[in-house]
Length: 150
Image (cartoon, rainbow, N blue to C red; front, side, top):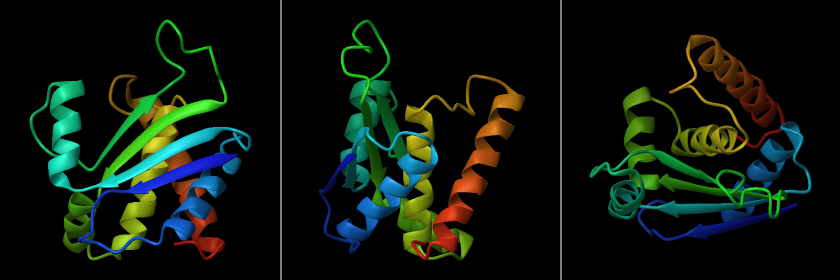
């Protein structure tokens, strides 16, 4: 598997090697051990631009995912899963509000975004699918915690 990590912000220190290991563990747990994933860590300004330009929402958010397996050419290279873009600024605020570590929140957002790329949805598919996604989040996050990655 290939996980590309790009850190485009400097405000919040990110251990990219450690984050790559988290991503690889998530992909393995989801049954995608040979797939490719791109992870971009940015600030609120960067994610706001993406949110505005691609989703029509002119505000920052915590995580945005783009699945490469969707659309007319989604089957060209099924091993390329897509992109997960995370705002470190929003993750830090959410961590502080929840009283948890920044790293824990960052890893959860990576997990959440990766689940979206692999077909999980909590927004458009109803309560049963939202519960299924939340259960998978709990399962894999526990795996990350037990493995000392979070």
